[in-house]
Image (cartoon, rainbow, N blue to C red):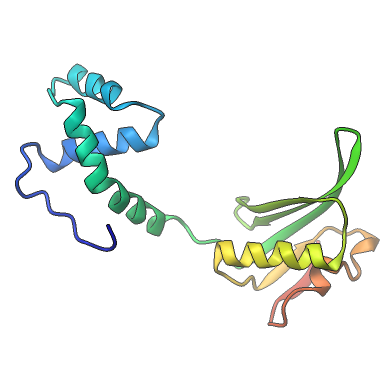
Length: 162
């Protein structure tokens, strides 16, 4: 359904009813019949088959519009590196959080090495499509030159310690 504009021409119901039905279906784990019942409680008689058609026609367009409206990660990231035990085995966890406290990405690895750090950053930058201005780590001595910060691609990202 690409970037086609929405056309409600020829539909019997108003735009608000159509968009609310599509939103209910995609936002909550509801079936078409459950959405039909919810609309019936509001006094709107619409069949589950009509809701299915609306979801097929408008669902992807609504999802793309919502995705575009999501806030982009800010330019100051906090990087947590920690050893954790999962099922009695020691693992290494990386977590990137932006300055607003939203978790950008999490990676659990068996080892703390340069290849894993590059993989984490590559996946993180591909997912967020932004480059941080500053990467902040905690004040541990082991962070003087951690492999994660050392292996950052060369750009103007500064590394500071909190």
